Length: 546
Image 1 (cartoon, rainbow, N blue to C red):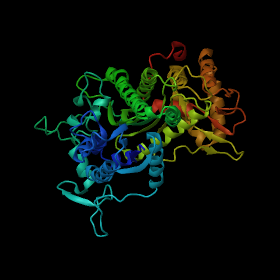
Image 2 (cartoon, rainbow, N blue to C red):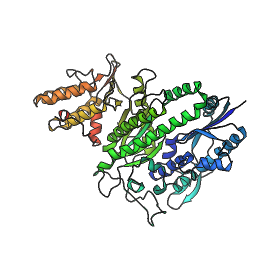
Image 3 (cartoon, rainbow, N blue to C red):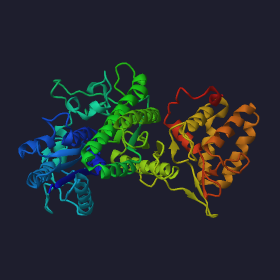
Image 4 (cartoon, one colour):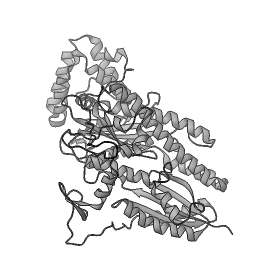
């Protein structure tokens, strides 16, 4: 009787590993180490192919997935797979010290049965944390930035740990393969910034230059704000369940279907990242300057990138549009009963370049999760939700608790944000559209709509509801002395964003749905966009601009 054996491997807590220590130069090495775990496009350099060669298992082990720091391996030879898995777990800890990962093994009459068993095994073992190597005793010197056991004494930085040492070996941007995934034709490693500070070279490009290569991030004037963007595909669990249903009726197609789908997702993400660079970064690049973004991670449908704050929303719109279009083409080519396209959720955190990115990426992940969950709620079960975004601007201490509303004594809540925005203009939903927010931003930039009174109103909305009512009434009274179409247009856009909005109410709040106790306003979001000098799309209508 034929028996299939499986071995599953997935990196976890990727963001924590990449940003551990909060030094931007180390993120390149961390991303490259993760990319080179499984990247089959460079077989002589990736760890997986090297381990397979050592145990002579290349011809007896197959993969249904090997991308994004994960692989699903299958073999009919239990001994070969056991030998491979034993060496792999040790090799990973030497390859990328401090990297967290889960593993699982299983067997079955079919690949699907073996996969399901291994998946259950991996999920149960994930609750048992694995010790990091090298282990440190109570008297071991610790690295101040990471808390890990120090293994080297750096002449300028003092004690550093093995994970940091390893990351810096791979921190040469000129040899970083993951950077190519973000780079469209004509763009190479020299077109990307290497640091935020001119007096702190980020990389030592010893292979191509005799002196350090340093490209400073191209800020505009004194504004040093950037956007931490985290993106992740929607509905992947639902699609994998659909694939499983297809495989149950045709078990021999397990490897083919899963591998083809994994490749379709990976290629769609790469194409979207490159398209976003062409649309949202290259046109706004000044001669002699690098692109206004810093790629961090691209694996599967998981993307992390730092973009200059004024271009961030333009970037994600271009990314989402290309991702949906490219995935539609590739899913159609699979000729399976799958959704017509894939969509994606974004979390965006605006912060200063000198603030900790390790916390920013946690907040971005939390915002992305809210955006994806909100999108899921507005579509019937089984349908892919629209692409969405939730953003937040850090104005004080960086904290993960960014969604706390103002609570009132009448059991209602007031939120100075609309929360999640839908990116597509074609999708009809109760959630507000990002394009309508851009229209409101454009209108508020009209000379007759000076943002000073609105900013004062927003501050009062948070600190003094009584004064806020007076300020709102006063502002509307003054606006009635302006051309009538301006105030009318303001109320019209507010109504598009917030259908329950009533201009006669004492405050510019309204619930997204009737009878809901959660009241919102888009004015806080507009002021965020103005604060980061958000670039307005060219397709904002003249009517919106007035």
